[in-house]
Length: 92
Image (cartoon, rainbow, N blue to C red; front, side):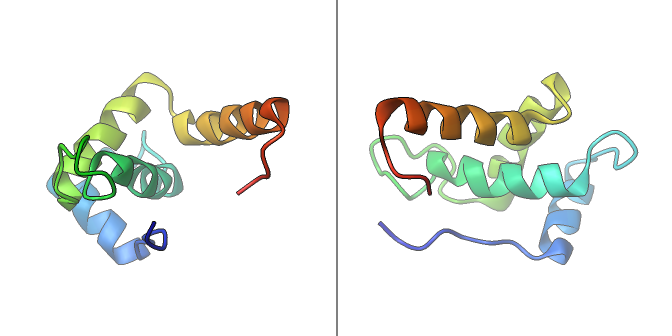
């Protein structure tokens, strides 16, 4: 598996602006977390690739989740950590 992709604040803001993100409603850090998490729908796994790591396609997935819950990615991180602990897997 390749190293996790990280986006700069500038990249995140630019992608969000292109998608019409309302920064008064959507937290920039949550959107950044979303972009990084949703790359799992990209080139990471050819069998499930639907975005080709395209930043805007990936951003649309993140935005859809953030429109449901403003802190979606914080909640997801917590849920995944709890699941790993329950299954006896190491964090990370």
